Length: 416
Ligand SMILES: *[C@@H]1O[C@H](CO)[C@@H](O)[C@H](O)[C@H]1NC(C)=O
Ligand SMILES: *[C@@H]1O[C@H](CO)[C@@H](O)[C@H](O)[C@H]1NC(C)=O
Ligand SMILES: *[C@@H]1O[C@H](CO)[C@@H](O)[C@H](O)[C@H]1NC(C)=O
Image (cartoon, rainbow, N blue to C red; front, top):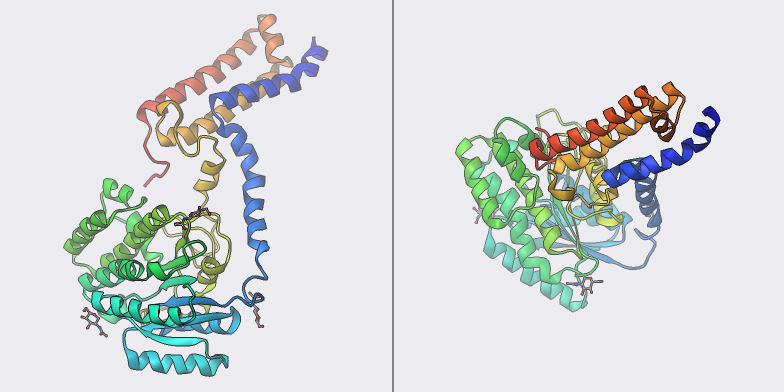
């Protein structure tokens, strides 16, 4: 009996795995995900090392707010190391012209031009788009990327309404006006977010219903509604965090509406700039470009994601510090054959936990085999009480928890 049960064990395990898989596919998905999902990303990352500056292909990039801080540091790197022609956006033409000279002097190249653009002003953005159109038309080329870097807050002493207007509506103004000049198949849009965004969403300023909205793409009207809500708080920190959180919602919407573009939002890190001066940030602007360079040139696994300053994916509902593990709910979901949909009308978090429950059931059955020394079939044919008890436990546990989650579950895999 022992012999037959050991011989049949692998078969029984496989059948069980199949059975459990049919109960919920993420069992095998979870077993697979560890190896496959991650290597594919690593492979993606290593494919395009040469593309960045080897190819003679000049990339034209608009960087707003580029006369100082991170924008200026990025511009220097793009011109000197990445074979780019940068349109250096600055709302103040004198300071912009000064920065252009600095970039030329620093890099020894002149692939940089001033573009006067005030992202808070519709007319200024439209006139910048016209100027850009003329500049591009002369070489009949398209823009490779838009970097929405211009922003305000904190030490700039700006009132909440202006923070939200510049940081949240500004990038929309720029994209609306400049999109016709962006390469429609390979083009990229990179928005400068901040860890303050997820900090605001996860904090105590919003109701749970509101928090849930911030995890999803938002239409313009929804964003305006949230802006009005944040303005009532009359707090510049809430305005800053909220402006960046809403920028993430806009970024997701852009990614949805323009599937051919690569759209990202990122945190540059806690960098010492005019905006943060005196607040304890010590890293120089040159170190704030890791995620920018990644979002501009690497093949990304998805569009619309939020990237941390270390170039790893970060969540929208809590602040992930550099060095902490990459946020990866979507890896599980990608490997979930349901593509993130709950089967049979299960609630979304039931869909994830259900797979775990099935795994637990599998372990219970394994334990039964180890303890009784019999395979499942053998213990049933023998009428073995312990075998039945374990099998019952596994079955009732899986089904019971599934039903419980289906009824009591949440439409989100996120717990605040
Ligand atoms: C591009 O070239 C520069 C100098 O030629 C080099 O320092 C830099 O590391 C290169 N960048 C990449 C991404 O290959
Ligand atoms: C930018 O535009 C806003 C809105 O029109 C205006 O209040 C502000 O003074 C402008 N800034 C500059 C530097 O022109
Ligand atoms: C997007 O890409 C697909 C496939 O490459 C192409 O057929 C389609 O025309 C593109 N759409 C736009 C708006 O460029």
